[in-house]
Length: 150
Image (cartoon, rainbow, N blue to C red; front, side):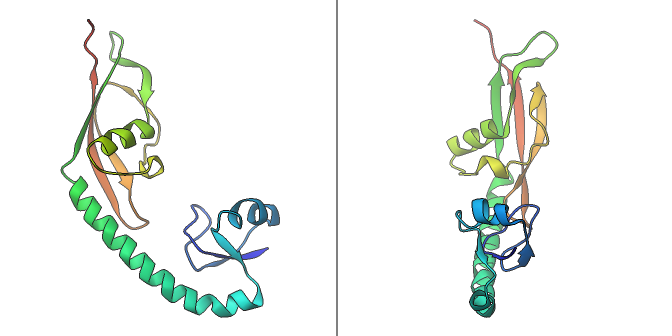
């Protein structure tokens, strides 16, 4: 089934692209979430107008992401976790934890934009990449420290 993407979809395509997907994927996921439109004759005619709107939206989103990246350049996050004798954490630090601590500092970043390859399980200092936009990536310094026992 051919569809026109209205939003960027990871591993599928960008806004305004006409892509071929399985019928069930389109009908059950993309269309109900308004991520895509069916590529009918009328929608294909409207595609040029839609692309102009998408280009404007893309430019404003990219500009906002660059400003946010500049603000995040000096941000450091510190998390305290319980750990064993050899600095192994009891549990782990996930993208959700990082997102919440950034929100506490006033940066509203979705956990899906925190690009951790795998959860952090050892005490230490890390550079965590944040994928703010398709073309804009920022990084935040993360310090995972041992929680003091009472």
